[in-house]
Image (tube, rainbow, N blue to C red):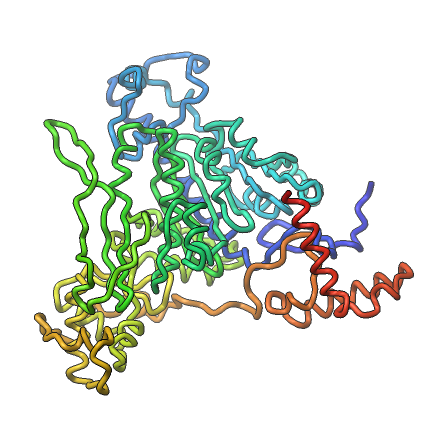
Length: 585
């Protein structure tokens, strides 16, 4: 059956083109171009890094033996990978349950140990645009496997593969299957696994961490930001195993909750993760982590997780590590941490604490990777449709303090004290003059990351208020309690050269506005577009779609059914709700 191109719209993104049906049959979101560009940039860096690690492994083995031992490649274990057990990552000296690895005893001739191109699994492909872009734009990529459990999506993906020519046909394959089943039945077979679901990725994590090869890359998106940011704490706990806290840092906390959840799933199979890049942008979070296997390294996971104590009166927050390490002879043992780190009442304002977590409190970026990715993106500017956006985000991330979890908002501090806000440059200068580090956050333009304790932060604000008095307030308010205490540290607001980041000093864009109105998540495939979707699509798009349905109905002799769409919408909503209930029962 030939495709009638009159029924489709050709969409071009990067070097790939797809055919989208004029009806909303298969999900496509134009706003995710930022996500796809960032993924391509990280994938290019991963392929280069993987090659470096492989060459370093061969060189190390050659040096350790002093000579090259000839050996038939057929004797090599099929599941051996260049990054097995994370040895090349420098994380741990690893031993298996049966004893030390014997890999160091045998050295293979480099010519016979060629690195195979990485296999990529796109677990939820929809139209297949992402898989096609990987195949066409990433040099050195191997087979790209696109999965979906929707027949219409698989049909569209296969149609788009053919539409993109011979190279795509040879590299991309599409299958109608449940991604979870496919990943479970193909353990450690994919060098890259990409999860980009419509909503929460939680149901895919257990199978995803098993299908990634040792040293492979797991890319994961979560768009259920309301859940991750605290609107439904009990739902977040049921999906991710962490309780969110409603703080100004909630979007960064969402990143850290997702990382903690992935680590939890990996630990069940003696595996652990190493984040290389974690991004919050637009309406979702996106993390890129490498997965390694090591029973000994897995034991240090509690050191990377923390609970969060957030004061309900002021912006003070504190982190409580889940575990601690103790030296034991020549090894290390792990125990539960000693706490609590805060008293029952906040020492600053006297209010109680909310407790959230556990969250990932270790670094969420690898600054070496970030620098490499940013330089690569700048050198290939013309190949990224969303160059300005991803470049600005990577620039901001490159300046973040890597070892400081969460942040606070300068405006929120000022709102607590009901005072005028100091400029960011002055406030940063005061922190630097107090001998502490400070940086911005890619999550929030007003976010400030620092290793200064909250006592210093409030002392700086008290000194600011002395020079910028506030009106009298009720004595029981948190701001009144904080200001009633004399500062133990005298703040120095003289401008410091480090108060502005390099990007700010060079006036490099770090936070860009949305490129168009109604930039955000679009409607699920198959959903009937009605006037209630104006906030997502805009009046013109909704009216155009409804008018198009009227014209189509008129051509088919259905004028009476489509005379007044807006009056039928309540019935359509009830019909859809009934269908949803039937499909889930």
